[in-house]
Image (cartoon, rainbow, N blue to C red; front, side, top):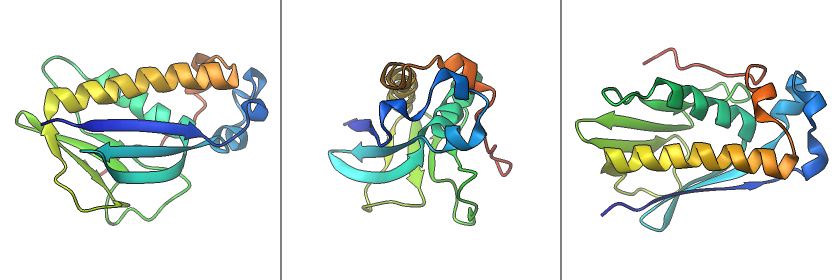
Amino acid sequence: MNNLQFTYQFINEPNAIFNKHFKDVPTILSIDATLTVKIKDETYFEAEIAILEFYKALLKWKQKVTTSHIPSFHYYSIEYDDYEDGAILSILPFADKARITTIWAEVDIYNVLDQSYAVSKLMELEAALRRGLEDYFQIELEKFVRHIPYRKDDKF
């Protein structure tokens, strides 16, 4: 049984960022959304995050995915620097499964899913988030991507 749902709700008003801000890191990092991850209809993770930074982590992960290699996905934020317990949100592939982990879990739940299902849901999230950001804020995300701060995972 696979049941994984990602949702987000923008916190800022649509006029909080414009295309002219594509190099303005403080403005970029000020764009927040509540990201919710539900597993089997239970809220596993819910937090306000810098959504453009999260989007860049998703995009970087997607660019590394191939048919023969599914890398781990890890989201770290430059605004939060205590990572002794791990990433804010991760998807860890193994065999034909994937485990979803977070340092801010809302509930203790079985978090192992079919790998292809989990990967497809993460790919869908990236595409939906791209459209959502561009439509809601009326921005061209491609202009912003290289200027969005991104904390790589140096441990894995």
